[in-house]
Picture 1 (cartoon, rainbow, N blue to C red):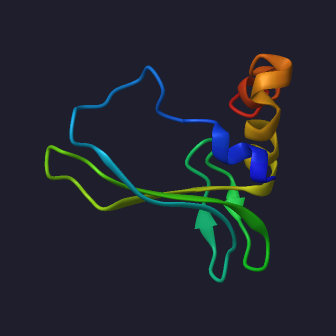
Picture 2 (picture 1 turned 180 degrees about the vertical axis):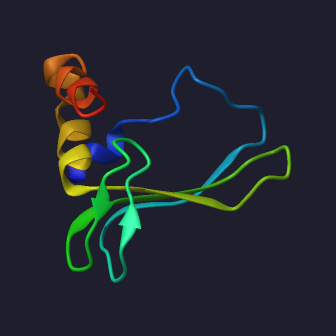
Length: 90
């Protein structure tokens, strides 16, 4: 799962000089959340990626949480050219 941290979920989408990453790590979720990639539920006690950004335009901090399956797919993105991650949004 740690390999998922090498993947930038915002690469090529948007961004401005001054955007800052505050935290990025693999965590055990304590509360239920919604995955920002597949929109599926993230159950308490499961592991996944949590990424907190502070945007230069003043929005934030904003935390994106990714379920176990999407985090695992992020770890494969450099091996399968993003196929597993693309399949998570279908």
